[in-house]
Length: 214
Image 1: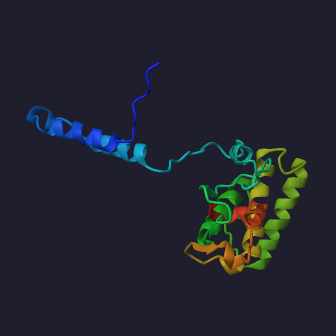
Image 2 (image 1 turned 120 degrees about the horizontal axis):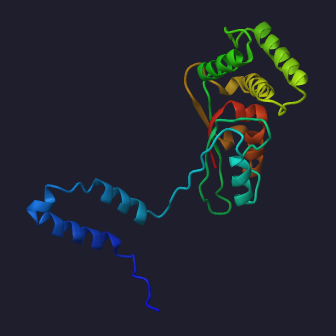
Image 3 (image 1 turned 90 degrees about the vertical axis):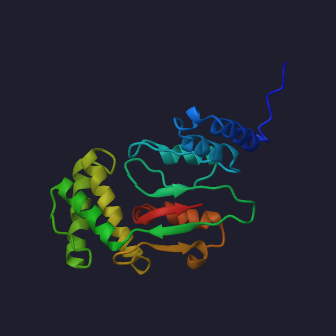
């Protein structure tokens, strides 16, 4: 069986073909080579990306954890998280985690949407403890009425709102009013990847994280 052609000189081979193309005026004016250059950069890059996308609670985190053979991402029935997670290879001993938090404005917006879906107060002031306590109580009541956190879509939304509020209260020192804040694992005194992952995987923390980079 013939050996497959080597791609070590792919850059030079493509450049040679493009030079031939440019030498022919009738072809040069008709061809857009942007897509070729984009594909070439991806083909010769030392790394590549795999994107996992899907509906909330579709099992993306569970699948990724299974592929990695370690519990990095939060995964629980009924809890919908919109946290963007980026995972890259690191040499042993050089693993680290970077956490980016939602702003208070983003949390307030998410809370307002969930409240409207649940038929609760449309005005959500997360800085008023009486409002926060009322929402937490209402969420617990809804979850109880529905028979559990994952028993219905309404219960899932109430659970998501409860996690969001708890996350804000537990991470108030790390959340800015209008901008996203980013911290390395050293800021939290995490000495290992698993310590940082355990923090990020906690439901209330996961709810207020905008992005996690492993």
